[in-house]
Length: 110
Image (cartoon, rainbow, N blue to C red):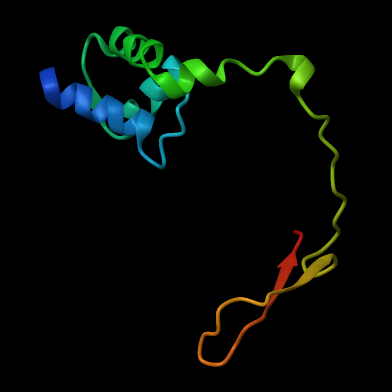
C-alpha cells in the first residue's frame, strides 16, 4: 500500500481526527496509529506523537484501562438460519410525526 507522507500540523490534525472524531473511539497508541496507516498516511514519529496525544487526552486519562476483572463473560448465541430468532419491541409514545406516536422495532438475531 502506498501511503502519503505528511508532517507538522497536518500530521497532528490527522492523528487527532483518528483519535477524537466520532469514528475515532479514543483508542490507545497502537490502534490510533493503525487507523492513521489504514487511512493512507505516514510520518516517522507517528508512534511518539500518538503516545503524546493519548497521554494528554483528558477523556482517555479519566477512563483508564479495563482490567480482566471488569470484563463480562461472553455467551455465544446459537442460531441456525436467518429469521430463526426475532426480537420485537413496541416503543412510544413519541412526539407525533404525521400522526404516528409509536414504532415497532423488529430485530433478526443472525
